[in-house]
Image: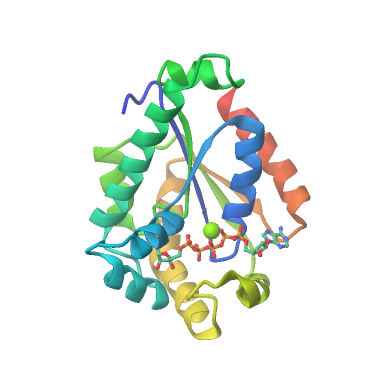
Amino acid sequence: FDHGKVTVIFVLGGPGAGKGTQCDKLVKDYGFVHLSAGDLLRAEQNRPGSQYGDMIREYIREGKIVPMEVTIKLLENAMRSALSARAKEEKGEDKWGAAWAEGRGRFLIDGFPRKMDQAIKFDEDVCKSGFVLFLSTTEAVLLQRLLERGKTSGREDDNPESISKRFRTFEETSMPVVEYYRQRQKVVEIDSSPPIEEVYAKIRIAVDAALA
Ligand code: UP5
Ligand code: MG
């Protein structure tokens, strides 16, 4: 991907921080393509004939990070197909159509990178990130959200046992990635404890400043 044209924002935060929720809102207002690494992995897990299905299911239930080759390939494929799909749309068909037709895609990558090896590999092989939106809150808030969502989500990792494993992986493996970007002045940290709209208002300010 041409770094001068493609903008990538990583959206990071603990399990249940609101990454998916806030990305959905940004898509509506800014025309980003939203790619959730977790959603891509779940889709691959359920794809008939996938050689990775069982492996992904096991990793997700255990709250562990799937080997990066699999996730990066899924992300790269999804970025390419989004770019070509949007480029085919007629210019002006939507307010972002023209930009996409010129290959100037904007991507929100949600829940990735969450391990140092992924961060370095993606930077080198795919594209450098513009900046990182880091949604932070307490484990008590996260737990309450995930247990509530678990009543209807059907997600195999929204149960107390998997949730505590996800918390541990986030602290031990994913926070170092946030710190790595923080040292490089790439992180905008937003408290995601308040109501959804309040969090989103702060995110908009950060995104507007970054894109200006
Ligand atoms: N909610 C959201 N915001 C709220 C607010 N401000 N106030 C009140 N409620 C709020 O939100 C969670 C719930 O909280 C929802 O019910 C929402 O309404 C409410 P959501 O937006 O879904 O939060 P999100 O941060 O997206 O939570 P998610 O559970 O998706 O985060 P995870 O990081 O745990 O899940 P993900 O899908 O990214 O990854 C799952 C697994 O995949 C990982 O554990 C790992 O095993 C694997 N994975 C990899 O191996 N590699 C990767 O690169 C990525 C994932
Ligand atoms: Mg999510």
